[in-house]
Length: 199
Image (cartoon, helix red, strand yellow):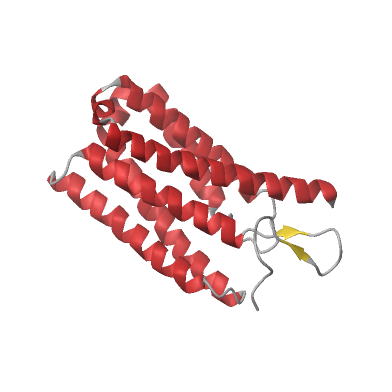
């Protein structure tokens, strides 16, 4: 039990850190737009999606108490790892479609968070509506990114930077709120950095 407690706690911390790094990467693209035209962007995205995929897969297999934040992370994690492989093995081809792939990833993540919000409601969590609204905003952001990239309204780096920041913040919020750690005593929930479960 103690070992399981440590695994879930580690998964929670790792996922929050990886989400924070995603937001920082988005901010970096906005602050240093020249990364768009350099090989540094390939390294940045390759490492970012490799880390994100590993964090999500680790979270999925950690078996947290309510299985909300990580329930869809197997598919997302595999997608991130495949994206990392494509970025490093086929850089020139992938670089052309990278903004669209990132936008699709954000849109997919937002859609899955909609399901998370409905499951949070079923568990009786008061803030399920906030999860729902932020997930809808993330979906709109992903859809807007796909549209703007297709018509060329905004620069790619501005669009991708913005949605990466939004996705990172969304994942920090949901992971921090929904991940529950099994306690050592029966029928007692221990919340790492959280209040007691709302009824």
